[in-house]
Length: 428
Image (cartoon, rainbow, N blue to C red; front, side):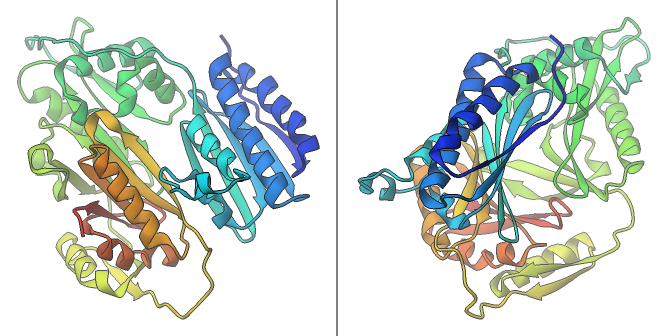
């Protein structure tokens, strides 16, 4: 099926009378962008709930709706003026306040956040940009035991594998590696193939003289000026395949504007001499090391930090030989939103959760602790909290993270707009 790659936009107002038009915009456009009926219905309901909520809390405000195709997903972006802290019910753990409201004012936000695969909030002055993402439907592949190839002849690199090769590499990786070594999309090979086709992920595969896939490595551009890689995955015995793939990846990455290359999911096949270790995440029996490589001369930059976090940052930057001017944040009584919003990215099968602040309200300490304790009770063993040090309001949350039982583990150079500091929950 050919998927429509054009965006659709509409301007409505926060009033119940405009809800049918908002529904129609989503219902009519998403099927042309590849969404199945069930996924279209979920995104439609999420947009409807947001409009209904704004009609009750910010009546009459203008709402700009954009439906944006992504090849393997569709996004609905809503831009409007409102108090960003009003969106607190979109948290994974909104607390009992939702049920205590007899009018159930915020119940629609709970439904909207649960109906979509991911949401994000960006503040631009008085404008709130709320993005809801719904992924296309792809069949999952359950891993089965596999066998390694016996090396035969010289390997070659295909820098732009077609869909069939991408899917074959996924299936072979599923058979030979555990889930902790794989990007989530590997479990849906068709999804990863579409991501590669859209250049949201880059993959290179190693081929035998007979055209068999002997290995693969993939990487993607993150939110900042660094690349995140996954692999290398080798499907034959010996070390030559991993070395060939890693060298190819580094050479291609060095030709981009990226300043660094760090691992999202590195395998034991990664040649360690080409990288330095940033640190480890996870429990003792499931620790994951994060590997990093400079891709050029670091020009240096300035970052914000809560005063209590400065000693950790200074040591990290000294060990990594990175030039940073650390600017301490200061609480001078400025106004903050009443309530906080935190994005939660979960991998239940791996017992992993990543928390990212979207709105930093006065209740952040309680909100963050509520997320951590709830996730712990649900069996999550690795709970991460990430802060982008380019933004003073995020960096200021470092003190709250420390007081809430999170411990700083490592720095991801240029992992966001600037460096990202990664905390891991231990307990208070």
